[in-house]
Image (tube, rainbow, N blue to C red):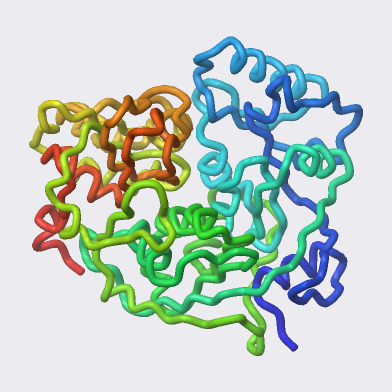
Length: 422
């Protein structure tokens, strides 16, 4: 009986034993990522040894630059920890900083065919790079960095085969909103993406789709490797040992589904949930908004900055509407600056922030007040996620959010892509 991609990676990381759903796999961890939140005093414990400092990375992202004394204390603890053990991959406040999953993508830390862990729930973002990546709790993170191992219960896999190509103005976020609305939660299941249409989705688009797998309650979310992925990895992390992994021809899936990308349209998730909560934009068009947000580990890529700039070019954000844009890393910020995207976005009246989880998590740089309405291209729209619990948060693609910011109300982005080549 053949194995899926996730099963094959866990099998290799556990010493080569055959892995199937229901098994508990004890696996070697290739990369462990710690964040500023890891070092908060209430959860951090003294570490006496590391299994391998070269397999540890530290990225400050949730509360950066530090908006509270507690956040400053956590970052100081992280710096001292890195100094104590000689950890070179420290992404402190500065030019190499960013949202952890985006830094992992920028630097090629998620090696195909290996296991990566992080204390953040959206760690499955690294599945875009054919890496079995998952968020784990504090004790498991400490165990991983001190022993080099962790464990997972192996779940069944849902396979999605993509065909066709997205139409102009339709993005990976819309693919997610379709899956969430059509198929609902994937609790205790893995998601595997592939098929002939996969090659038409950019690596940045795959990152968005992999990241959002957390909102489907999936365990692992993973893409097949292809030339685009391998060329990128060799460029950003030359010399790294990779194990690109495809499913076996006779892999066993719980279900296999085909999605024609060309049939999809922009969608919006209604407030308070993303699963089974997607509607056509026409159902909510005209809904007044107070704030629009594009950013987070899901939608802070250079592609997203380009789309926002395209929609905003030569136009102005509606009076009374705040538009906040957060690049995923400082490197993406610089690239967007060089490409002219930042100037275009700011000239239109939006505010561009440093790379941080800030507005997405309701931490800083853009919280919502009582009864305000926001449309976001980020990871979550739960009640209270981005500020006051009475605020209402709709979710859409960067194109939809930017179009809505111009109108001051939820708007279909299609008009901004008319005439673009399919």
